[in-house]
Image (cartoon, rainbow, N blue to C red; front, side, top):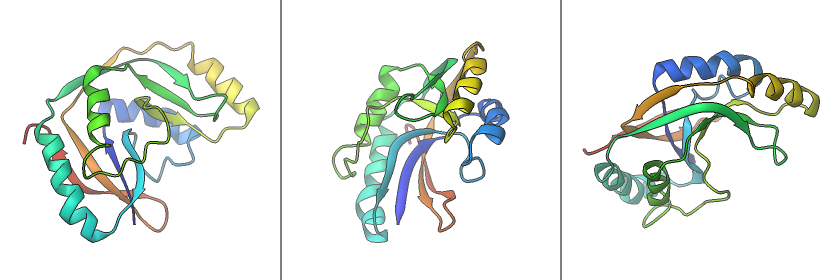
Length: 170
């Protein structure tokens, strides 16, 4: 089965992201707005229960809640026409990402970690230019506290569901 690890921001940020995702993100109905902390990986029930969940509990216990700050949109062009709310990089979120790729957890890093919340993807080049041109002029001043992450699993229809939540410091 396919699993992933993400942090879900507050309702305020999710509402802001969804105001764009409804229109520009074909994955809108598959998963709420989130920060991907670990890209999807394959595991079976035995691995999840005996190795991965104990390791995630350890990582969460050793993690202190931290703040995130969003000031603008950015994109992954020219690699993909994906537009996102840029989560300003911090030592805390980078460290959490590193710890989620060590020890008993699959080291499945394909890309450099860029903390973000996707708001548009799979756009044509023309659509991308128009949408990014408009959104890049917007300024955001959003702060939020991240105090947990979720282990997710993917359903047959492509939707993601929470398997377990891990609170920091517990």
